[in-house]
Length: 52
Image (cartoon, rainbow, N blue to C red; front, side):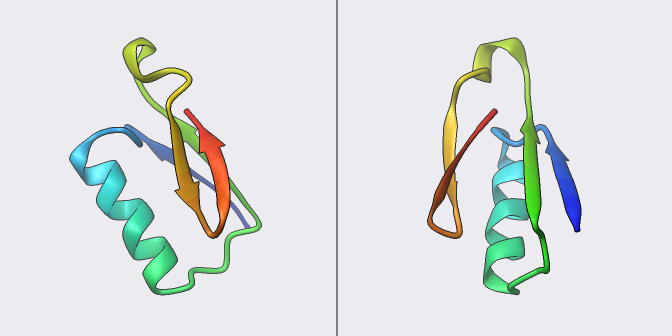
Protein backbone atom coordinates (compact mmCIF):
# COMPACT_ATOMS: atom_id res chain seq x y z
CA UNK A 1 0.00 0.00 0.00
CA UNK A 2 1.20 3.50 -0.82
CA UNK A 3 0.47 6.23 1.74
CA UNK A 4 1.30 9.89 2.33
CA UNK A 5 1.39 12.17 5.34
CA UNK A 6 0.69 15.85 4.70
CA UNK A 7 2.19 18.02 7.41
CA UNK A 8 4.72 15.35 8.36
CA UNK A 9 6.98 17.73 10.30
CA UNK A 10 4.19 18.95 12.59
CA UNK A 11 3.04 17.40 15.86
CA UNK A 12 0.15 15.49 14.28
CA UNK A 13 2.32 14.25 11.41
CA UNK A 14 4.98 13.03 13.83
CA UNK A 15 2.37 11.22 15.91
CA UNK A 16 0.95 9.66 12.74
CA UNK A 17 4.42 8.34 11.82
CA UNK A 18 4.86 6.93 15.32
CA UNK A 19 1.47 5.17 15.27
CA UNK A 20 2.02 3.70 11.78
CA UNK A 21 5.31 2.21 12.92
CA UNK A 22 4.03 1.11 16.34
CA UNK A 23 1.05 -0.73 14.84
CA UNK A 24 3.08 -2.12 11.94
CA UNK A 25 0.65 -0.64 9.41
CA UNK A 26 1.10 -2.34 6.01
CA UNK A 27 2.80 0.43 4.00
CA UNK A 28 5.06 -0.35 1.04
CA UNK A 29 5.80 3.27 0.20
CA UNK A 30 5.37 6.28 2.48
CA UNK A 31 5.59 9.83 1.14
CA UNK A 32 6.07 12.82 3.45
CA UNK A 33 4.85 16.32 2.60
CA UNK A 34 5.30 19.56 4.48
CA UNK A 35 5.91 23.26 4.16
CA UNK A 36 8.77 24.84 2.21
CA UNK A 37 10.50 25.45 5.52
CA UNK A 38 10.57 21.74 6.35
CA UNK A 39 11.61 20.62 2.85
CA UNK A 40 14.66 18.37 3.05
CA UNK A 41 13.98 17.34 6.65
CA UNK A 42 14.51 13.62 7.17
CA UNK A 43 12.54 11.29 9.44
CA UNK A 44 13.28 7.68 10.28
CA UNK A 45 10.56 5.10 9.52
CA UNK A 46 11.19 1.35 9.79
CA UNK A 47 14.93 1.78 9.58
CA UNK A 48 14.88 4.08 6.54
CA UNK A 49 15.30 7.83 6.25
CA UNK A 50 12.38 9.51 4.49
CA UNK A 51 12.65 13.09 3.26
CA UNK A 52 9.93 15.73 3.32
